[in-house]
Length: 336
Image 1 (cartoon, rainbow, N blue to C red):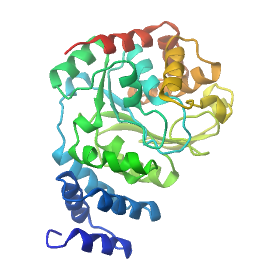
Image 2: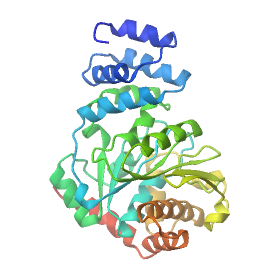
Image 3: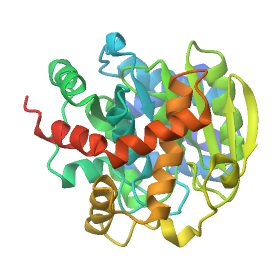
C-alpha cells in the first residue's frame, strides 16, 4: 500500500477495486496524517456513495481510527452509549441526545459519543455547544461529569485525528458519507453496552455482525421507513444477541405517529427549543413518546432481562420527575 500513490489508490477504487482490511487501514492512517488533500478525500468518500462498503473495509477504517484515538478509560462506570449513524436525511430533533439524559436520569451511566451535524441541521455536538457545554478530552473532567451528572459527552474530533481531518470536507459535502457509519464504532471509551441506530438494513446487518464478535451487550435499530432510531412512524427492526425482531409501535405501547411530528426545525435554535421543551416535560406527546421509546429500549438493553413495561416505566419516570433535566443541568455546570 505504501508504494502506491494516492492517485493510484483512487484510480483503483474508481475501477471498483475492493480494499482489503490492511489497505483500508493504511489509507485511513494516511488521511489522518494529512497526506490527502480535501479534493482527494472528497473523491475517496464518493466511491462509497456509489457502492456498499464491505465489512473488511469498515473494520480496516475503524482499526486505523482507534489506533490513533485518544482513549479514555471509563470501565469502572460500565457506561452505555446511544449513538446513531445519522445520515438518514430525516432532520429529526435530537432524539438520541435526549435519550442519553433520560438514561442518566434513570440511574444508568452514559458515555455519549457525538459530533456536529453533517446531513442534518443539528447534531448532538451542535446541541451541547448551543447550551454552553465545553468539549474536553481530559479524562479527569469526563470522570467528574459522569460521577456528578451520570453522563459525559465525548466530542469525536477531540479524540480522533482522522475525523478531525475529514470534518471540513464532510461539512462542505453536506451529505451522508461512510464516516457516518464509523461514529458508533469508535467511541473512545469502548462502552460495554451500546444502542446504535442505523440508516438502512444493509448497515444494520454489518453492525449486527461486528457487535456479535465482541464482548458487548447491544441493540442495533432501524425503523423500516428509514429512520436511524425508534421513530414510532413505522415498525422498527431490532438486532441483538437475542436475535432479530420486528416490532410495531403499538406493541411498544405507543400510537403510530406522523413523520412531521419528529421535525427538528430549520435552525439549531429551533432544535434547541424542542430539546429544552422535552427535557422540561413540555414537549408534544409525540416528541415525548419517541424519546421514551428509545430510552426504554436502551434501558432494556442495559438491564438485560428487564421487561419492556418496566423499562418503559423507568424512562417515563426519568423524564416526568425532572431527573433527566437535572442530569443535563449538572453536566452543563461541571467545570474542569
